[in-house]
Length: 102
Length: 264
Image (tube, rainbow over all chains, first blue to last red):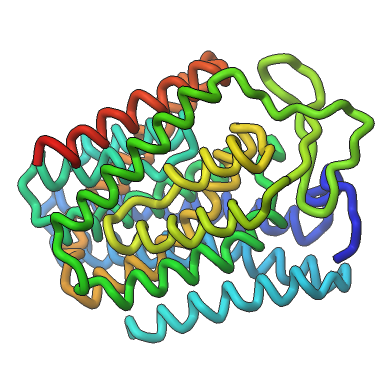
């Protein structure tokens, strides 16, 4: 592994900035879908509520994986292959689990 | 359901835990849901807490992404095994395992209440270590990760526990990183919060396949509560110092251990 000082690990690389933006946009989308689901439930539109809440929970499940994908891209850019392998193993395990669900 | 989510979200903001140790007892004992349903719904709440904590801690550079990705190999592996073996043990066995773990971790946290794991600025943090600005002291804190096999073992156990009993595993990862591996508690909490969002996925899938998630309305209500609770906890977290944070965590774990070992 490359011996990089860790205070420069998460630093403002472009990929890390993109990851933070994606996480924030995703979080706002989740909050809006949940709010829409609650509003639809209160209004008695149960089908719409179900779709909105299911979408929020689906997004909630997938959002953390964007961080792993961003880290994978960052480590590929750096050529730090042990971390690339670790990120790839994590994504493969999660994908294998999700494949059982669909 | 929303109130249970608020409690879990506040806990996530304060301690970097997923809040499962609050949600499972509230849903199971408080609202009368079967243990499997409580565990599955709790993991959905854990996902919401993890997203909230990860977004908030990103700007403070508390998250250590490289340490997280290494430990995720072990925690997601453990969670996958747990999801496969979900129907292998009885509910009472799950409760005893969880209660015992919580009691041990609470004892360790109290015993090491004043340890800070802070190294001089000149020390290089190594491949997995890091540095951040401590809110309490306003000084740069440099840390080096030690005893990685202990963190890896705790991560495997956290993953199995996540799938089995619906907690994110932060109750194992945070104390292990802070107590034995030299990681400051705020970094351990942020890194754990990020990890548990991914570690929870195999458990959510496993419980979904077992039919434990119920209608999306229940899960949605928990998520709404978690997001509200997280904002409340975040406001409080700025006024809580590290020692109080550890003490609060130990008291909480002792309470949960007693509940699961003796009052069920």
